[in-house]
Image 1 (cartoon, rainbow, N blue to C red):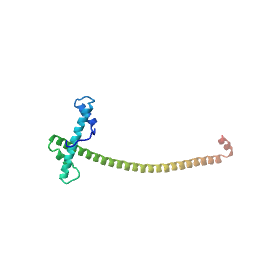
Image 2: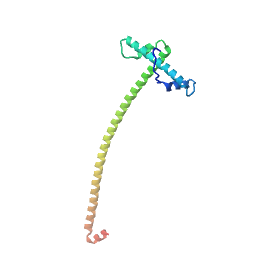
Image 3: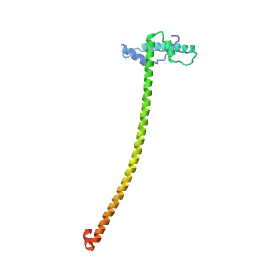
Image 4: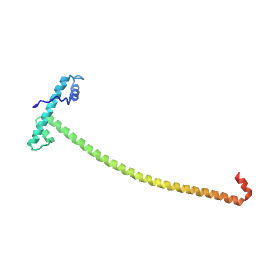
Length: 167
């Protein structure tokens, strides 16, 4: 560690969980957690500083993944793990892109289907309304016809039968 760091306590929960996972008590001593937190923070700062110097030597201001790989090149285990994490990250981002693309296509299809169903429903409603109007008109016509036929019968029967039909 090339620099002294302020007490950041960035990784307290993670360090205490790791300690418990490796066989320590569920609530480790605070001094132990702080010590490991400082070591982890210092290591990360050193790796990032080395990667930054690599980028500067390449006359770049931005860090790339290759800079971190170069900084970890002397430790094959850490380099292998870093490459594995990078590959996994790429797979996850590609899967998310594919999922979002298919989700967008599916939502577009659903929107189109709903729009078509809405148009069909409007057409069905219009047809139903026309049918209802026709039925109402037919009902009026049949009622009118039945009334007309009753009136015709009454006229034919004469005034004698008029009293009987009123009852």
